Amino acid sequence: MPNSNGSFALQDGQTMLLIGDSITDSGRRNRAHPLGDGYVRMAFELIMVRYPQRKINFINQGISGDVITGLHNRWAGDVLAYKPDWISVMVGINDVHRRFWIDASKHISPEQYHQLYRDCLTRTTTEIPARLILIEPFYICQNPQPGTEQAEIMAALPDYLQVVKDLAQEFAAIRVPMHEIFQQQLACRSADTFCPEPVHPNSTGHLVIAHAWLEALNW
Image (cartoon, rainbow, N blue to C red):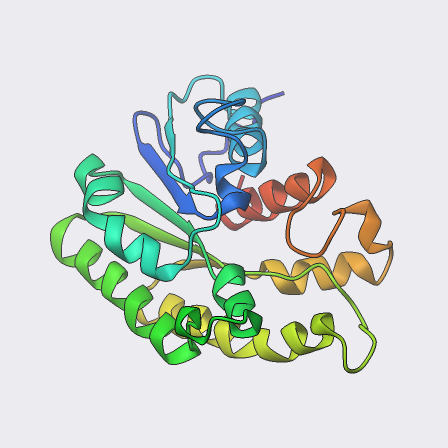
């Protein structure tokens, strides 16, 4: 039976815009237009099943490979122009990865990540009355071998997670601690359950994200 207690944060007639990298994109620009076949679509469909009376408009603005500089550059046209009631952001794992690319000019430091991310949120709060949801970046890996790239990424990630925590507090945003949630899952199941490699979840991994995201909204 649909939950009718009214506690779910998304209300009838509202628009939810989700933006991020490939995890949000998930084919929304080609094979799975318009919502993709990942956590965005799963969350939308689960809302539809539990709250059939609520007509909530979902907009997926994920772009595969994007980083905070990309979001910053397209924030006005891809986010603010839609005047959504809610904005959900998940970006950061590509920013972490760039630290290990050969081209040092592509490196995005935690300080730059914070500055550009904060500017996007500041522009939002000054231009539209949208509620914010910040999904922390994650790396589906546990206890990597010392000296490996996975170990270096796991060591670098906390600085970026702290940025999201700080921004969520500053902007009174709902924070979804996805890295912590996946680590809890990995204590019980192997990483292969959720992903073929640490960055891009399979359908089970996307379901974990969708469930955590919905729980944060009192689904």
